[in-house]
Length: 358
Image 1 (cartoon, rainbow, N blue to C red):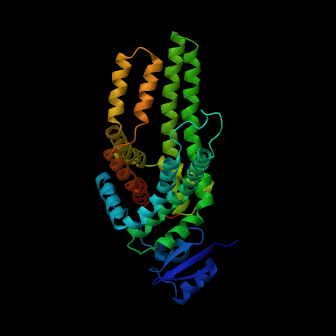
Image 2 (image 1 turned 90 degrees about the vertical axis):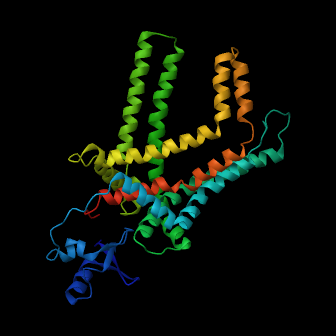
């Protein structure tokens, strides 16, 4: 099939039309360089003058745009987050509310400890499980919505919540398939070395076993770094440029490995690693502040308690306590700020691909 295009002129959309029709419109003067066009399967609007298919004789020599510094990328991400706060909050609630309902409805005691199954507790377990599944099902909508909302807000275009959700849902099958592959790869190559290390450790202490464990740990770090590099921009290619699953993974790998001619701190890989590290450090700080009494108890018990069973019971009792106001407040802050990481990667993607066409 011939490529199909959409044309946008003063917020009015026309199409889909094929390439030959657009060439006729261009010859008639109905399509000018300033009109925005996109392929039907893509989501990003681009000025028609950037496509050599239609304006090859009028495209000036490309001028490399100035690259943002990492500080500018972070500042721009927060600016977009504040401007589109309403949209990003709705997307966050799609995954946060089911998770909250699952935790709230989970039984506080062991339902298998009695002689008969409590119907109320069993129903609570089923509801909690259903909320967990719903939260996982909403995750692809959250990912696609972040890409769409960031693109529209950064371009200064208005977007209703209904339109955002409608467009995000259209990407659910593609993003869900990529989520299974990407997160599944991380899970596999994280758990597999750990399982092998545990098997070696159960065999008893030995020099060879210790060396094998060290090699597996090094391999785990290396494979995780490779996965991070290859999967750096899969969300942006899947949604913003409208590529299919295979093409999104391929383009993400190529872009993640690009920039070899740049200083190391300007390469997309290292910029993405810094952005991810900032979020991980923030999440770790929130967890430490929230769980500090439990962490203190752990170190006290592990240095004074000789009985492993008593140690386990003490830690279990401390973990079972209801979270305090500070823990709840910090958890809410983390949930509300969750879209920032996705926004920052979209800004990094636009900065890295400036001057390219997809």
